[in-house]
Length: 96
Image (cartoon, rainbow, N blue to C red; front, side, top):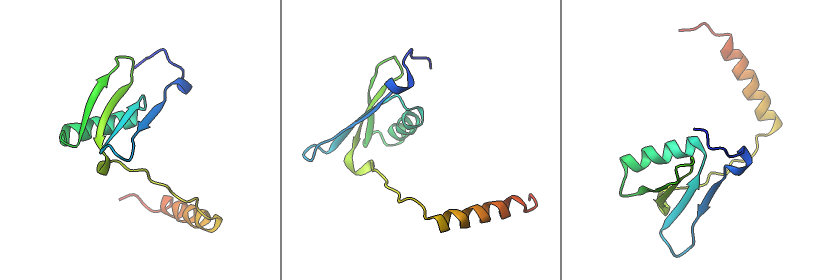
């Protein structure tokens, strides 16, 4: 969808407070919109689309227990090298 907005203007906002059991998510991010849309169709009692601005942004409400942030530690240099070796070995295996 062409929105006329520059990439840096296409933001994702996540609002919640400690008292309210609902998180509000406003986003232009296509992957997140698709995932939240599918989730809201499958679990309409946990997540719902509350606004479609028509300019590419969607707003959802989702119960707090259903949304999480995942923090991942950076890989050590040893682990990166090991993964690189494993990947290059896998690329040389015959296709099944």
